[in-house]
Length: 447
Image (tube, rainbow, N blue to C red; front, side, top):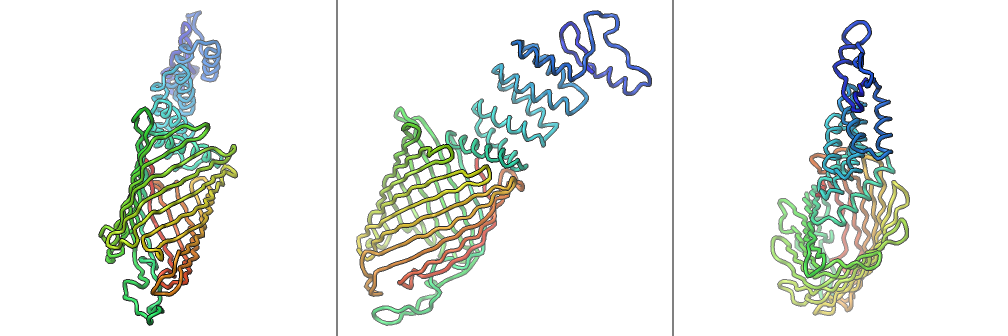
């Protein structure tokens, strides 16, 4: 019970506690005061709602603040939740955040309050805090429709955030660390050649590291998006097969109707076996636009000049085109289809290539776990016969990936993942004919 004195809500906790501890009826705290009456928490909630409806937000806030002192933890939580909504309506975002954090301090499993905290933090401009609150809610498990909405909101936050990053660390058993044929001998136009051990399939333990960071800054009157990405496969004890790649892109984001256009400068570098292998520079153009209520279309094109250290015959221009369509079928299921093409015009025509392919990715959410599967096909054709083999290269490569991300087991913001990858490359040139299987356990996180 709480006491309403002179129109102001006052906590009557001591009276209630005394009544619980002392036999007999509780004393009337309003005895002798005709302007005072005792009301229940339910009545005070109704009075607060009525005051808010009449525009008396300050009076409603006073009543809700009084209710936050109620001895019943459920009533305190409800009062703080309503208080946060009222303060947001008054424009007091810090006050709303304070109320929600007080609620969560007593009830850390109140996921609805955590989602509201994330939303209000985003309104205040604290996108890092908002993403943290949403990740915590996802890790605890959410109903499918709510989880879908939260992921959409998280993606929207990242798409306009000024700074952001992601990282993945995984350790796996790899059946073919150097992507090489298992054959000991290969036929050539001269004679059968015996391949050295390093040119044949090698198995081992691999550590994969990948990360990306981006920054949006005002430059030349436009919003400039800069991305730095890196990917590496490291093989302890077999460092001669280590493969590390890094890239930098930077350019303006330009609004185009309902979509965005991003022209960008591209720079890339690659190291193999610890030594610099290649360097490239050029430009790319990305166009992103909605495609219906549940879809999104992205088109990408790039031209990069590559220079291969120690092998000028591989120097040349690389061209790439890709179209990606994302579609949400239901709150639990989404898919992505990518169609891509590429070409390499190398200094040596037999090393020049044409490629085409497609990938299909399907994602299924089971509240605390996200399952994913992807299949892909790539066709590679050479432009002229390779002298040593007397034929023009022709490859058919099939890729399959399946795995899961377990949000419920998040540790310090890092989410566990398990992934299986299989590649089957069939080629008329033995050097490019190989199979590869890998099983990874890792952690991933977005900042």
